[in-house]
Length: 112
Image (cartoon, rainbow, N blue to C red; front, side):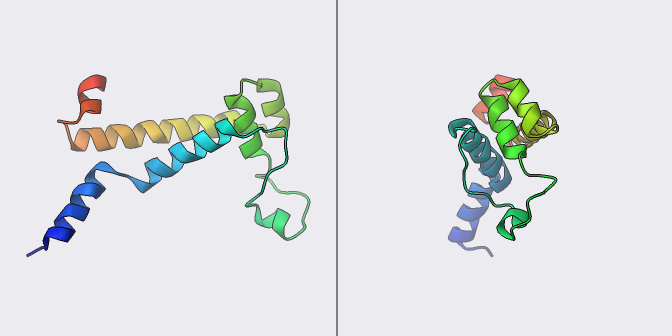
């Protein structure tokens, strides 16, 4: 028999998704930064001193897109637009999945 604490955690996991939270925070961060200024990079290649990386610039590209600067976005990384579309699609997938699991939720009622 499950304890009350485990039942409560399972109920919380029903409503929350770490992946959904992560992608929303990433988009908020990219929308709030100034893409023209250098920021900290998680790039392993950059940390090792290697100047070229196939993924470098994609975050800045998405940030330019979120600020409405399409030309600078394409100049930073050609796949920035594609990456943003995939992230938004994934967020929508996760929201719909969570909403369909709980059809009593407000989001489910609004969307469907």
